[in-house]
Amino acid sequence: MGSIIELQDVSKLYGFGDATTLALDEITLDIDEGEFVAVMGPSGCGKSTLMNLIGLLDRPTHGTYTLSGKSAEHLRPARRAKIRRDTIGFVFQFFNLLPRLTVIENVALPLAYKGIGPRNRMKQALNMLERVGMNSREFYHPQHLSGGQAQCVAIARALVNNPKIIIADEPTGNLDSAASRLVMELLSEIHKTGSTILFVTHNPELTRYATRVVYMHDGAIVHDEQTAIGEIASTAREVMYTLPVKTEEDDLAGVSTLMKAVPHAAKPPRATAKKKTAKKAGSTKTRRRATRSKV
Image 1: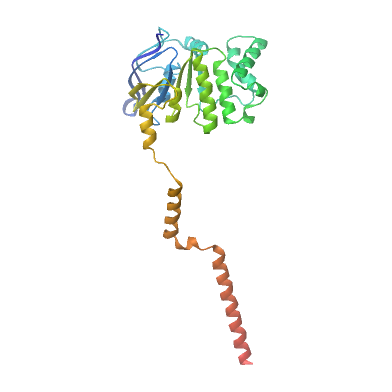
Image 2 (image 1 turned 30 degrees about the horizontal axis):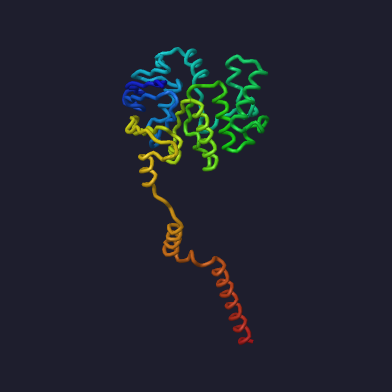
């Protein structure tokens, strides 16, 4: 398969003069059709900016971008919007489902922009919901879904136009581990149908699903490695094993240190109250004895 995405010396600058920020620094990247690419790196390294450029949500300041063999950096807005609609599906960290629309209406929305009639778009939307296992929730509103369910609906919406490319910007960022696995398994099944998938993640474990992992730092690609599906990428593994792991012993040690630093923390508050009560009672008895002796 040939390259579906080609970036050559692409840079992205924001601001002017002394306030200029270099978000991407001469990125060169080729992605073949059918690849499952994970993009990793620290916050602020340019991952989302790169996804926005590839997804035609933004333009490069310098360099060339070729999408499916055609130059894409100087397209007019209407043409860019049409390519986004027909070629690229987006999955966002915060789902971006419209709260006033039902699940099936959210999924059908891209078809409405394509000019498809109400009956046909509802039928296609339902078929897509069945594909992601959410057809039983078709008349729910987004606020009645769990995070994992909402992300599955967002994936169905991204797929309803049969795009060649899926761009997922931290699709599991707001999900627990079980929901994250559900979403990644779903993306993996979509990948098996031939779609090209790019996803941003901070989680080394999720590189198990990728065929390739690209690492970014300060707006540049610093490492690019092919990986076997089911295995954590080697560089991601190094990152994972250098992260501090908090154990039960660490928690107990912390409590012990707190007790030593604040001795009164070991005493229950009621003990102090009883002591004051006893002292007060004792003083009352003393006053009574003194009164009797005067009499």
